[in-house]
Image (cartoon, rainbow over all chains, first blue to last red; front, side, top):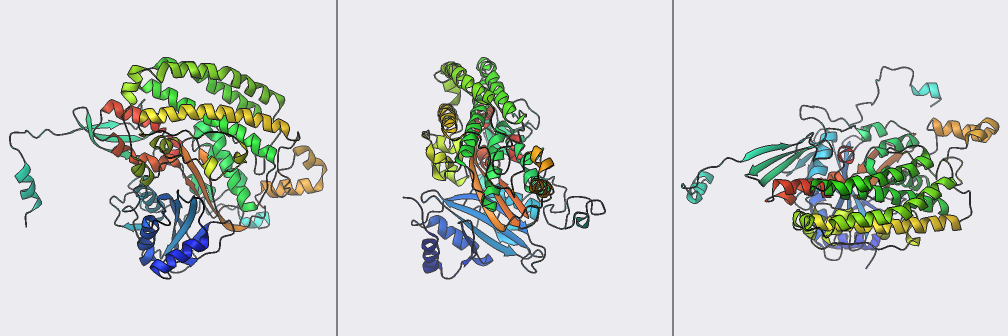
Length: 168
Length: 408
């Protein structure tokens, strides 16, 4: 068996769980949807357990920071894969930076453990229910979350690299 | 309701003295860890009770750096992920950008890429398996086959000038065509390496000591392996024939004939055998790739994409368009569409994924590397629990954890 179409996934999820997925159009052919925060665990658990879908493999978790989107500054992006159907999908949740709390998926996928720790480490997303939410790549004494956009990579006082020098 | 303390008191047998567990720091710098990462192991005698990894010693913030760099400047960062097989990382990154930009690469370039990627896979597996021999006490095989990694590096050198961190190729193809020496060296390698590798296999594969050390150590069930996000040879050793080269063919892998070896128990020995067989498959792939390259019209080594592919330097001095494109590409002013791309390649130790979010600017808005080591290394304590300390060394070695990829 190979391939399961986007319509099949979304109609299957909608009939079982209701209107929980907000589709995001993606030009590169991967099923992309936004999930409300309170439905995330339910949706992923359903995708994992459902015999017709069997999304049994968590490929990747990563955070993204959109400082200009008020109330939904931080995004957590999940890439989930069904090895049986050889299909990938991408789920996103958005949380405010003032209260970045997302349910942990460690109860479903053991591999989520370090991926969530990494996301916490760099973006400060609090994964509720995570067994051991500590920093993983940075040192424990660090207080900031370095991949957030408020930390520019180079010295902001440097004048010689300003965009207007380059006509940008 | 009983408290915890009462509960344990009930089962506690006073005649058994409380033996405190020993704590052993394996690493951060230990010859057996093959990289800088630490394992704090709790030992009962020589049995491992539990373990905890500390990683991040060579974290270099590549994802942050990448947010400041134009696309072509990110290639050197990918070199330093899994530095044992840098060309695979490079190609994975090019495929990601090409997918975003919609660049169609000619078949000949695909085959050239397959050739270097399979050479890289041979180099990576060769290191992993021969070091596994070293960790079980067989140094001879390692010293014997290691020079063939040098032969592979000589081929890299002929292609791009570098040996370890190759920065090989460009977005859209290669910087120059393979010269005849490349094919000459590769053919020589294909002729000389197999007997050597066969001899290495004769030394280890049916060696009583090696089998006793590796069979049954560090096994993992299929379900746990999937749940832990295993990919690559480590997953295939558990018995799942999942290989991105066949499941989601990239770089025209669908034109090639090869087998995907699988193991059964997922223990150290299976991982070793799967990697061995993959080396043989890769050698066959390299041979097929050379034939396919030669069957294609000569002289094509990049896509016809003026906007994205750096023009030859001679043209830049003579031709106005070439000068403009050169300037725009170097300054990172190419027109990249806004969009999100996930592209994965079958790296030497698993699925190497690139998740690129572009907002149409000169640099990625966000770039995330899905590093296979980082994800499967978290299963390590579960794999070595209850086993001997010396088994832990062997298991770590056979997992092929590369510190550069672990820490990004």
